[in-house]
Image 1 (tube, rainbow, N blue to C red):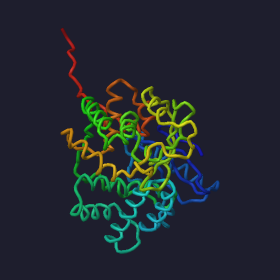
Image 2 (image 1 turned 90 degrees about the vertical axis):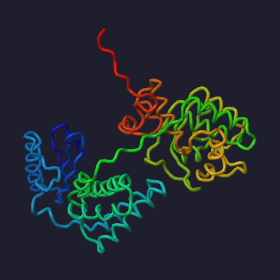
Image 3 (image 1 turned 45 degrees about the horizontal axis):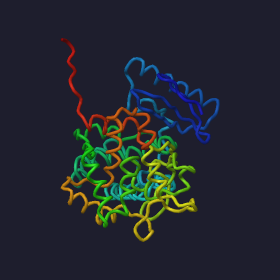
Image 4 (image 1 turned 45 degrees about the vertical axis):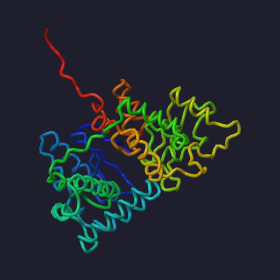
Length: 366
């Protein structure tokens, strides 16, 4: 499959059907033509590609893509609910259970509004968002609109739908600033670890908490971590699985990542490691040797600990934001932090850079 260069439109063949692919304003676009990959149809595709390139060059590009669809390609689009069915089947083997459940819930809500399995126009999308805004907060509405856009982007790549009505509808939503994470300070981290190490009720989970603070791994990733994910001397780790509600599955993004561990974490793991540990055994467990459930840990140990320390409550997941923010502040490159945490660099810049210490206006002249 060919990859389009900046400013050019590539013609691709996906399962014997033609589509166009290009980048404009740092966003990736796909236009499924619903045409078989034949010599004649490639000539048609080339004409459409040339028109898009010219519009980009002259700043007349139509982001809705309606301008570029040949009339003969505008039929055959599947209904919104069927699109959701196919997307969920695709996602089921790749995403976490909560993520799949979220999309099933969105499908149910959309079905309630549409009343039938039909396509969604930009006007439909805007009307739905207006209706849905009476049920959810503005920040949730923006997030859910993004989820709908994800489904339709996937549908475009698969040649199931022609355009993404949610991209246009999202522009009509009021701008809602994303809530900034509130990482724990160095002083708070020190106090939290000291309490977990010294309190007999909490000691069993001290290593679990320190590992999360020092690596920034997701809750399920740490809960599902096995000795087989480490090398022989615990100096390197592979994050390839997650434990969610007691079920083992792939990571949130479906991708594996590997990185070297710091000396304190290496020593922590070596202290826990038995001479004959089973590669399939969990590294961190409950007091009874079971799987650590995020909600149970939070209610029984995390919340009481923060209350005792008089530290404003933040979810255990905040250990991830804490690691990312402190790492960036200490000068670790965004690329390296992203490789360790599994974030995109864009997410790191938008949510974590500048959280620990705000930018300072430089003194430019004497």
